[in-house]
Length: 467
Image (cartoon, rainbow, N blue to C red; front, side, top):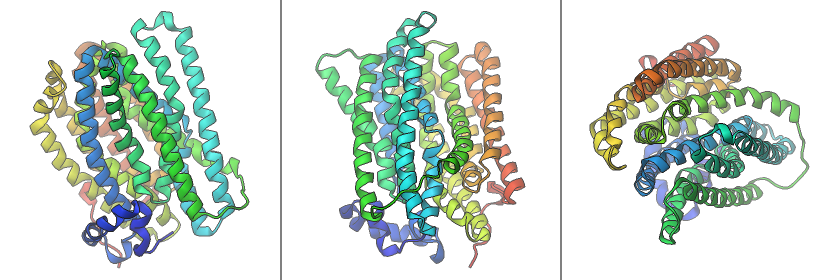
């Protein structure tokens, strides 16, 4: 569904910011998009890109401060638990946080307002109940297996599971916002507000005399996550009331689940794949090693943000073109590869040049992770060279094939980690991750070509635009 450019900015930004941002967004639209392609998806990418730039800086700065406050041991415990909860929250959505990006534009375009109301309500209830069950089972499992877990992990993991339902609900709300092109409301709670709030609350806790340890950090993270998710929920509810009149609801649970479950597999494999290296380091090595490796990976977030920004704006556009002009879908898909690769390559060069200095900011000993950046950057650039190919597959109904790619890649990553980490330590984790990302890029490109006839690679990007 297309919205007029006269109202797009107001839909994406708070009114005051929209007025100031309009001239800049119009100029960027003119550079990046042909006249018939300008609109909400283009602006979604631009705003997402801007938010990702700011969020990468905030995330890096906040992690530096947390590492300095807690020290490598406690910081390593915190990041392992937090990463596990972020993965768990995403998995606990059972694919609904991504499937709504398909359903909402489709229902709006076809005038299926009863189905639209139904999926908005049902998805929230479903995700909250499922994630609460995940959290309860996880916390119970930690307590029952406490004798087999290192003692310093038990309480932090139990605290982490308290946070999991709100992380899952926030992921779903982000999907709803993305489907409506409410870019700021989609990304700012998770990528701007929450990390800043964690940092501020941690500073307050330390000033009040609480310990600079993982337990304190997780309690702070719980508070920040609940506050930002509730605020996000209220904002989406207000926007929904303004754009969707009250009325009857139709529940197509079977159809929604049929689409969501394959996406659940794709997203689960993707999140596990993205974070498997940190989890495997935590399994084989000490918290101090987790801290060093995570700091190295966090430095790479300055490269990753390009990929995620383009993916955020492109997913809805892929879904829209699926029901329309396939030639435009192919041209747009090739363009997203260029938008992903070249900025990622530039940021990779910057990170390699400044990486050692950046790692030293985390504290003494963290700079030993600098050499690991080189193999990891190769993997990240390889992934960027195919653009958001997995979003293209998912949004065009090829989520099953995408799930197979990620499953095979995840198995490869874990197998390489098991083989290399005990022998080579952090170098083994970095090499395993880079190899898995290269395989993932090649497999996604091949799958997109076989399924859609679209070559998602920088070597074939930038095809002619449809006029």
